Image 1 (cartoon, one colour):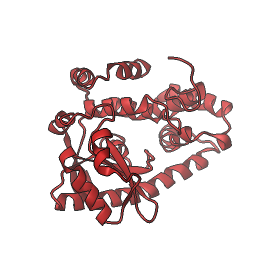
Image 2 (cartoon, rainbow, N blue to C red):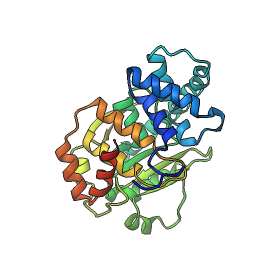
Image 3 (cartoon, rainbow, N blue to C red):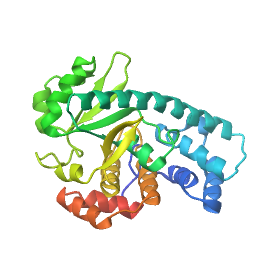
Length: 275
């Protein structure tokens, strides 16, 4: 798959060991943990690997592993719980305000993955919430966020809607939310998201009802978003994808047809080959 560097979507040998220790069961997980521990300085860890520590902690505890490093990992587990509690509260508040304004919503990425697949708010670190609205409601949603004191990172928002898929907003506390009007940056036709909405599944965020992508579309989104270069090594997509696959039935025919329809066969092929 080409040369791997520390910002590549494909894990290095050490990162793959970490993934195995966090995701596998039984002897395979324990062996990966022992090898990773010997080959890695936890004080010099990259941010991408650090994002897996809550999941690693949970898997090690489940296996009854006792190790001096467990307490270090527990710190990341508890920190993720605390941060995600605040993020979920903030997300639910925004969702309710959107709904009151007559704007239908869908949650993407970390929030949806946590509720539907990880099923534990401590396992999946996330820096922001990702909320999708229908493209014809994008300007209205942008206006509402601005009215609530959220500031976009772009000025020409009307032009942005036709050329992009999302925009980041921040509030006075520096908290972030990404407003999406398309699921995929690679697919921005006016009707590109119709099928995503049609087959979306209901989900509750702190008792606020919204929608999320169905499992096949969720896997598509994780793989397409993951298989690209990023400032922070984005190999956490592997954990997301495997958690989806291990948690539910995937409509593989839909995944294939969606990949073809959005012209994403190549990245999906690479991602599935790796998984």
